[in-house]
Length: 83
Image (cartoon, rainbow, N blue to C red; front, side, top):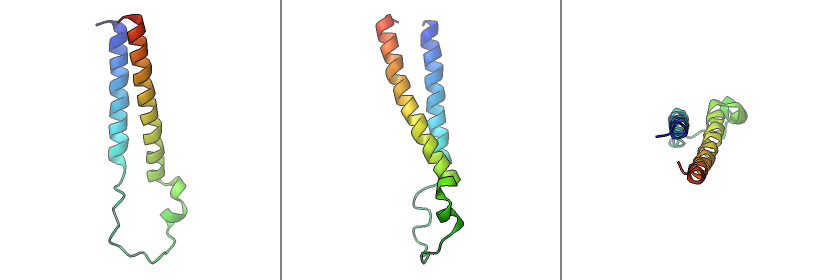
């Protein structure tokens, strides 16, 4: 194995672990499905964009896009360099 393959493999592993951690930190979307809220405005409904769930959802998208782009670039580089 060449050094380039090892570096790409380690980076790919870090991306995969980051995706796993961020997804596992998120709460389920069906957490309070049986509770009747009555349309009350709660703190989390008013500040949804600033909540931890919104932060984790945003970073899940960013890391997933980075993961797919990295895999495509990595395969192109390894293919064209003959590694």
